[in-house]
Picture 1 (cartoon, rainbow, N blue to C red):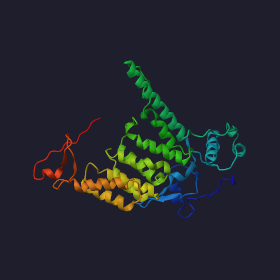
Picture 2: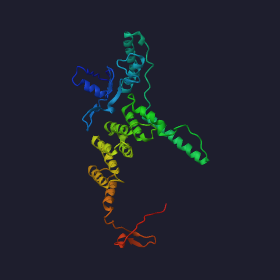
Picture 3: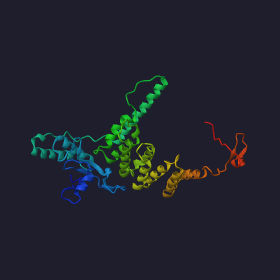
Picture 4: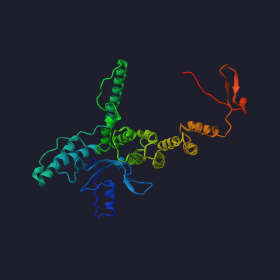
Length: 354
């Protein structure tokens, strides 16, 4: 195992801060010991909550844990426990071959049998990896495409053909994406992308949540702290903004938090831009302030010219202010300017042909 892994043991009773570290790594979950976790050392293992100061484990650094289908496998002895341990090795390995993994499984079987003959069953080969996000998303998009195609065919024929319940809907796939987001045998980025899908489609999940606002806040918080810097997470800020009308979920706070917590300038700019757009058809003062902030903080962003246009119109087209003059031609081709009607009550109608 030393080809791929470095062993670090924590005695939570004897080591200073051992209990704190164990609690953070277990994400506050109780249960027996021993317990193990496979970590990706290429990034920080812990992150500090900017609001509470509490330490949290970085979910994107977790490659696998001892939490199997039946709970903590502890020191793997039974065949299902050893199978989960082998699955953990397979999901976290870098260079170990299948033959080497199976050899480790044999040694583990010998260890278990030496303690009790009832543990004499071998694992049935290396467990298959979880379905990837790409595969699951592909299946969902294919079904959605087929669903739309069948609907069009029905409309052309002028009749209704019964389709399977929930066919071609987010509701039918939500449990699968949710399961992938929680599967610590899946690669961290697959879990993160599944979590973003669940957050984006939360309101069409078909689930009767007891406290939907708190759950959405938790999903957004996890995505912000763990995956907002990932290239595939460019749509996170837009997804947060789309959920602005959800009861109990504060999109404004989430986007502010995202801008402050992200290390990526791209993610920060996305958060600032979409936070400004929250106020576009509402609070003009907040809209102006947020636009100004975005333009000043991210002057090289491609959306600055659009933001400047919003800001210009916001400052010019206000109740009580003189409307900006413009010139053009009327329906007969005669030149016309708004200033020609100064001092008169003027009603403007903008229209066109489509």
